Length: 175
Image 1: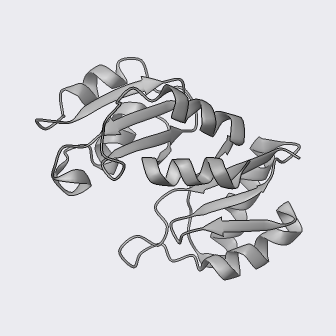
Image 2: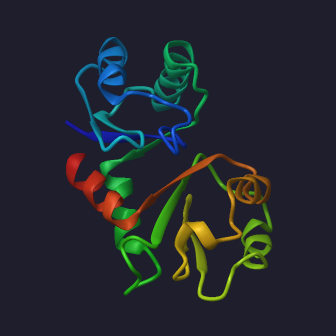
């Protein structure tokens, strides 16, 4: 059986967009069958759906209806997670500071160049397929100028980021 991760954007962050994982798992059973979650930041592991686009839309609608949170749902198969790990461009980066931002699709033309102009010293970014890798400087996410608004405006597509440790764990859980 092929397994996938459905990644929710910005849930349970600083007390906002609260989506209790136990309640979410229960609500998702009729939609996806057996599911599990990994940490409270919105990582759902399930059998790969027959129609990924419809499944993501249905999960998004369910979360909006049941929890009052409208959040993009971005699917990555086990193979896509492994491919992302194998091709990330920043060897030696800190597991906590290196993030993969999984995008819903191709970013806007010129997005990477625009984002390059916003980097603080020590930060690096690289687009690999539909994944934007961000190696944050020592200050981490808290000192970056790559805010949600800046990323959304430049990329033109929704995305959700996970640190390297979480991406590795999701690849393991979808195996």
